[in-house]
Length: 447
Ligand SMILES: Cc1cc2nc3c(=O)[nH]c(=O)nc-3n(C[C@H](O)[C@H](O)[C@H](O)COP(=O)(O)OP(=O)(O)OC[C@H]3O[C@@H](n4cnc5c(N)ncnc54)[C@H](O)[C@@H]3O)c2cc1C
Image: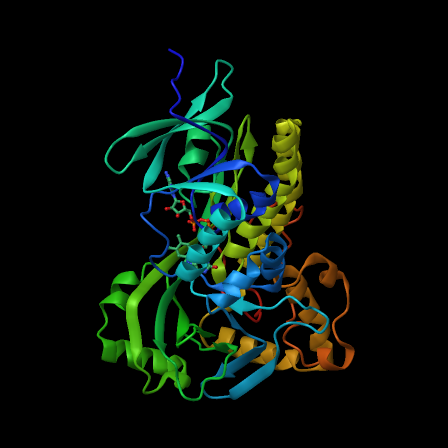
């Protein structure tokens, strides 16, 4: 029986995380009618990463949303520091290379979702339906996706016709599952404990990393506090979340002396278990996957939001004109996949390498990371630094340029990236699973 549609939109976006919200902002200038659907009642919830690297702030500026992000209290950070509990300060320097005007900003994830939602509605024709979840994809006689059946919280069903359905619904994507798209994935032997703390008096805004043989602690600024990312063992959630405040305070202070005497704020604390994944394909007749629905990276490299926003920008550039002018949508989707797939495969692989190295625990891993951090302060380190900057931080055209000459030698903005010891080969290669202990140390970047 033919479907009776209750609603119609040019694009239905399933998922109002950073990928879905970014897409709504990126499509705003095309004048398309976009229906944004999310199973959660509103933005917010637990911490899911808060770093907007220059590559991402460039996109937000292009969409007209960067001023709102700043106005919401985003903190610019310009410096990186690497400390060790017994060896002291190993390295400090600028985070963003000379000549890059786009800022590195930090904003709690929930605030970022709130701002981007408001901007999507303000800038374009975005309508929001939440809480509502995808029940199924609707198809025509030839199997092409022509819309989505949604279920609202009260159990009501709504069939929405759309020329394009976008799965921006995270790593357990229902859209991907309904499309029958396979995904390759692997797990890590480490996880991240995320929590907040009162701002230590000695802390100056910086991406501040405390190396430790049992797992590093990353300290990032929040408007009135600091955010902490603690490397812990996979499956360690019961141990870490079950600790008393005193016991947790002692454990963290042992790894990061900056936190001695600092009150922990555990309200939104959680342990984030880690996987990498990459969908076998991104698009299929009238539907497409972006963000974590298409790929997930280890957050050590801080690329989850960056790659979600990159997908959103690339998809809007391809399908915006096709949808607005009645062009060939399938050709536009195919171009999107051809463009993004190698970029994302490389990111998954590079983040995997960085994560293995950062998660190398024990005395040997510790000594190697200390050595490596010190090497970064040498003139030769600047050469390595450019690789990491190019991989994770700056917009493409800066990736091709050399950083500021005199400053570069000590600049962690040009944070070094070693050549992978075990090459994963072609751009569409992915990490092996499970990850092996790292062969050599590497300096971690922001989450
Ligand atoms: C628990 C958690 C913690 C994280 N922590 C970090 C971190 O510390 N650092 C880091 O770099 N990255 C982290 N990430 C990843 C990072 O948040 C994402 O890579 C990035 O924000 C891109 O997100 P996304 O929009 O693709 O997916 P998500 O942020 O997962 O958003 C998906 C959205 O889809 C909605 N949804 C799911 N299924 C349905 C459905 N059937 N119907 C309707 N809506 C649906 C969800 O409610 C959600 O709002 C975390 C992710 C999670 C899930």
